[in-house]
Length: 90
Image (tube, rainbow, N blue to C red; front, side, top):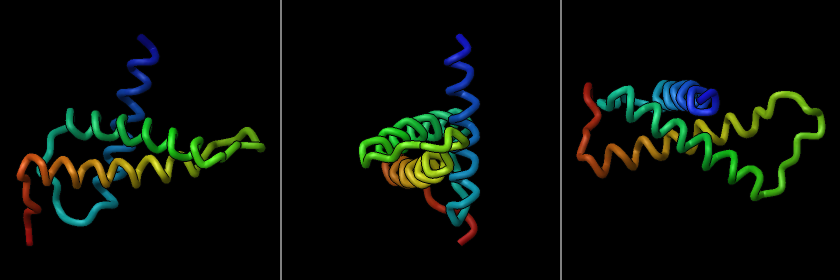
């Protein structure tokens, strides 16, 4: 149960940061933001490990967070394209 709550919190954080970084307004709901953020975190972490990154210092793995936000931003763009959502305010 704690792992599920952790995934929701991390997904919300990553998704929210990705939406803040991405220009324009994204008309998607909080559940989609959490889901895409969690998926971005998972795929981003997997990509970083795939390319052989190891955290020798044992501290916060910033590279994983940065890649997760980038991947979540890409997923939000793909989601908006598939669902036909348009940027507002342009």
